Length: 568
Image 1 (cartoon, rainbow, N blue to C red):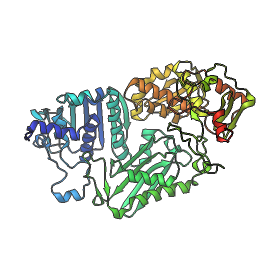
Image 2: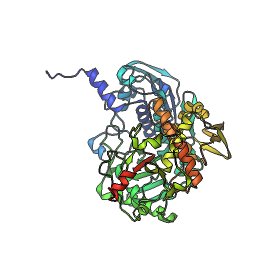
Image 3: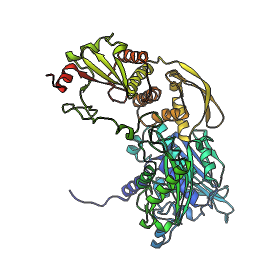
């Protein structure tokens, strides 16, 4: 196969695709330009998930008339001049690729004016080519309008996903920069709906409250620590408010969010628990001591080894935890015994040698969906012969039930999950009015999800009342819940956003609701409650697995027990 040099137009589109992956990439680059231009007010407008229109307006220093055409050429920038400048980058942008890449895959308009000019200028670009440059009235600052993103890359546009998903990611990007730069006022409008309107502040705690609500700090510890050459501020979870999933975890370095696995590991080490801390941390460090030029989209940084960042972050978080009273490892918030408690069991768990499931247990076998063996016939009967006298609960985790063919070991949480899941799926849940309604303030990205799925949530028994801004009052919830919290609602919204297709979102929603409403490990149950649980479980269409695929029960046959005890 003959090697040939690519056409310049092809090269341009490939290069643009590396920088601009989706609408949120455009938002990122334009906001960084605005902040670097000294803006104190930034307004972002998004339509059609960002593919239709993205408009970013700022009150920064502006772009002079003669610089506008130059700014859209590749590797042109006002932020660095020589290779030495790469050693100490203090701006968010520096490569000179943003406007070039954006204009190459869109129809773009730049309107700008500097203090030295009496009139503003408007330049129109189509696929990177300048079509028009004319004078217009415009305040000092810059407005950039990006339309028909990826119009000349139909394959990229086709596989971009839903408009709600791309809008949500763009909203998240605006939120990240608003968090990292509280000194800048941000306004965000999505499809005509105002999502954010944040006044500038010099207090990072106030900015976090502006975005996440006044109750944000109820679950968090304030972090403020100065080291030689490094400053760490932000918030981390109180040790008694850890989560079962990493809902909110963000690291910012010198005003930019980064993916930093080493620093995340340092936080986990500080907590020393299997649950997930939530955190938003801002690290300020001398630019000469970090390398931000190691990722095409500047999503990663590398610290000078002399900073010993792992130790600094771990010590900062651990000291905050200790000042709060430390961590109790006796029990998790969900009532599950910790690993420490499990190690105190007076026997060793050994997996069955002939079990083929990844959920193997010491003896016995998992019940497989549609099992036909004669040994499980007694379990197919609608009135399974189980009496309260033959029911026991062990470790407040499992129910032991005697059946004609042997015994069943039932996971009370997984079993209850399955029961609730099928109740929700058949729309049999009613509304339970809350004695104390919950005021909930949406994160900007959550609001878009809520608006899209509000009718669906209503159909399952939720009752909402609209408030001003990004707040609602949750007045009622499905009667499957014994208690309900803001965190429960946040996880429901998250379940609706992590899957691409509606059937998957629906299944994830029902599974999440069932998990949060089900009996937890650690709950003591009466004989009557255990009987009712077993009866309801075997009335389910699929009683043998929870919605997440874990087994609800394990069967131990008499024959297997007799072999284990040497009777056969």
